[in-house]
Image 1 (cartoon, one colour):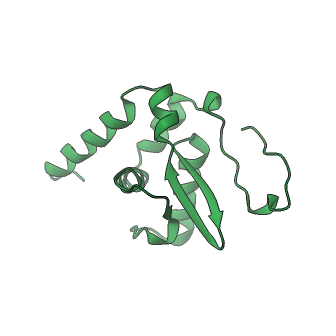
Image 2: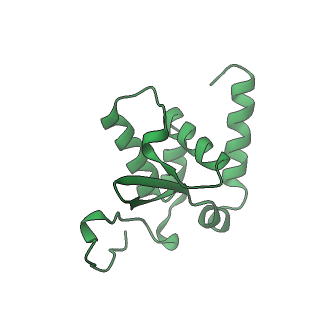
Length: 119
């Protein structure tokens, strides 16, 4: 991951991979987990960044934190602090440029699976 330059708020900044550092196998691994896929589906349906606290997930807070970290470190989402809230956004532009059609295909497949009663 590319380190960020130090600023007065460095302790509140989170590291993200640069677009050129995002690897397909990391993205696929991140999207393979049902809880992480649920997070991505929610972010994809939103036009705004969402606070992590808005997600009602069937896991503990520490596990939720882990899932968001995997998504961020793989390059699927970006996160930033706004005051005390950690906000998340889908990196759709980067993912679409790097892996055209992948995100839409995964999201469509997740919807179809849900319609079949598989998630």
